[in-house]
Image (cartoon, rainbow, N blue to C red; front, side, top):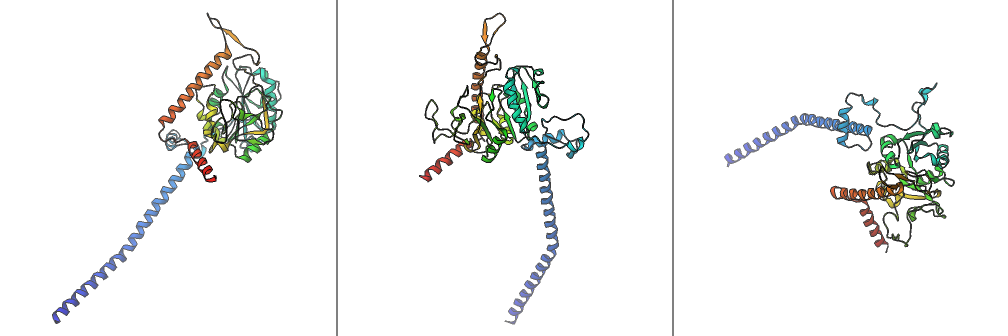
Length: 400
């Protein structure tokens, strides 16, 4: 019995010594664990700092740049210090000299842009438009499709506008080449208008106040019902409204009702006088096809650039409206009642307007095919408006 107690005491003593050893080992581990934690925190800090500077550099190159673009640009710009890089520009005219140029160098007062294709035969209409926009402190850029620039210098504002010349090119051709988002990103809104618009009842400042207050990313002024050409019911001015986002019309081929979810019943503006926010134009510029210069079909897809639900972010402003003269001037005489014909070499004469319309129709077909093919090929793309439609139907069922 005494032997058993001795053995039991020996085991207890051994266990006590083992526990003391483990405690001592754990105590010795504490400084080591502290070092490990410190190293891990340092790694996390450096990783976060790297990601921050990397994101900052991506934004410098472009606010929408991808990581791939970032690395590509980084390699090309490796020889420059970061602070000297300027990835954006503008369309502001700069003086060749000024006594106080240093104080004016970084000052920019024009925050909105008007861009128009113009021909000398529509000089009076363009003059009326430009005067109103200059009074509202807009930057003006004119695309001369007829090659005649000298005929504009007698106007008081001629030297204040930017003039770009290319014979027989369309508004969309000019816009794709000279209104790149990096160039116009300093402007809050871009007005891309035709030249045959009457602006007697339009004020740019009041128009933008409505656009901003209602959150419209893409918009257009309503058309006077007496306009020469009106193609879509939604663009006609509603006399009792400040603005509208949809139209109700059960006449004709296209029926517009409460259940209508897309163009031309809602989320639609026409190509003659669209107005884009900075973000909307970034998207719209990429939508414009480089080789399809007439732009047919683009207006039906502009709602995808509305930065949200097109039935809410796209609208027509009624209180500030315009008159569409309907003058088919590009490739023609500049007068709506006249038709222009030319003699082909060794062939019979042909009508320019007919040829242009035939080309436009073909481009519309190509654009639709490209859209459908792109949707089919991009497996990661999901039509955002299918989600909006399902959500809208769900809310309607809940209300009922």
